Length: 174
Image (cartoon, rainbow, N blue to C red; front, side, top):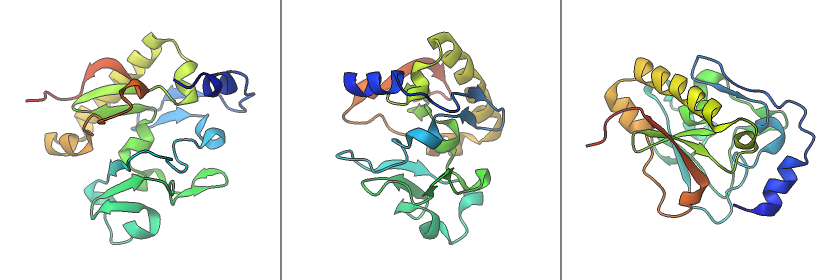
């Protein structure tokens, strides 16, 4: 991990360091509004896919997101189209599930913590696991197995060290 980045976060006087599971598929992450690293331009990385759910598909996706395909939004070198001065400009129902869960990430049927989020530094690992258990339960109760497979990203071919395993399964991988 980038030591300078870590020291910068550690010494930043964050105005809202709230981190909590909200029960509706969202992690209250008070760091997002100020940090914007993950929603901003993704320099040198491949596009980060964020599948959309059927209720989010209304023909206006391209107005709200940069799209990889007809049903998958993405973050790339342009960042996020919905990022405004005060953070995300979208209502919760329109945000990709990945945004609501962040910095918890679902990959290959399991949950991980995104190490490069400043929030990841502020809670002990056990608290992240507890929040991950709530997220896994919410995902299993809310989505069909087909949609869970759709939401679960493949592990990246590079930058593996950015993800900390929470050792929590959302569904069985064959």
